[in-house]
Length: 350
Ligand code: CP3
Image (cartoon, rainbow, N blue to C red; front, top):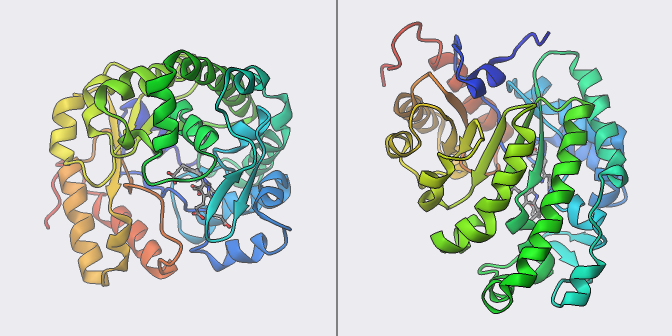
């Protein structure tokens, strides 16, 4: 059905004629076209809830950057909101929650959503699918329960998330109750995303790296495994646990098909740890795109060589920074396309 299903074939471990590429935060402020649509909405949250506008910016990077997949324009924080914790997105600061989770009473008040109050996301997915017209797959997503918990307890972003971690150490029982509610809500939400047309699901564990390996196993991976088990029967699942290279050995046993890597991970090491049955995704440093064109091309070739053509999806190791030049982003995408057409061998002449 899809004209370009490179992403899905790579995710499933099938043959590809070239490496697929998409970029985290591809629908975002690097595109003047995004900023123009964004200006039509009163604020970020209204923007996310406007299915027409969300669909429009979802499709933009496919047209403008030539990426091999779209990712639905939304935010991981729609789940806390659907569970009863509303948030604001404060310009140049980030998310802010008026109410946070600290006590049993707060936890009891949290709603497990059946997904029905997130209809605007499914509407945006349906509209985006229509506009994509089977050109490329559409990626759905959610935040990892631990990463959402971190925002819901902390109430905002943080360098250390020490308040959220304090709850893990002082009241693990309560933490598990919260994490279970988030997990159940996320499964309901993602199943509805797939029903609406999402072809692959990515779980963003952006704050995995603040946990110790043991804590990450207990408070994060356990819940990502539940989500992955529920979804991977239907579509391929990607787990992206940022800064958690220590978790790769355990992620190997997870039902996901794809493992996202940040730039701190060596591709050969990751392949050794994860074995042949996972697709690797990543992992250029978003700051590489501040370099000149020759340097971008050189390092992109090195990345392609290190990962090889099979079971690989090219991407950055985290989201694009808003002050990246659009032309450099496009050049990065083009480099991947140009250099990964090598027919048989995995190696590209660097
Ligand atoms: O293109 C895409 O990747 C799809 C859209 C997307 C957004 N957020 C839009 C967005 C996705 C996949 C996310 C996920 C997300 N949101 C994560 C996980 C990925 C990661 O970056 O680690 C996290 C932690 C959030 C929470 C969040 N949303 C923060 C901390 C911020 C503020 C920081 C910032 O970049 O301004 C946001 C806002 C946000 N979400 C923006 C976008 C495009 C920028 C706001 C704007 O355009 O005004």
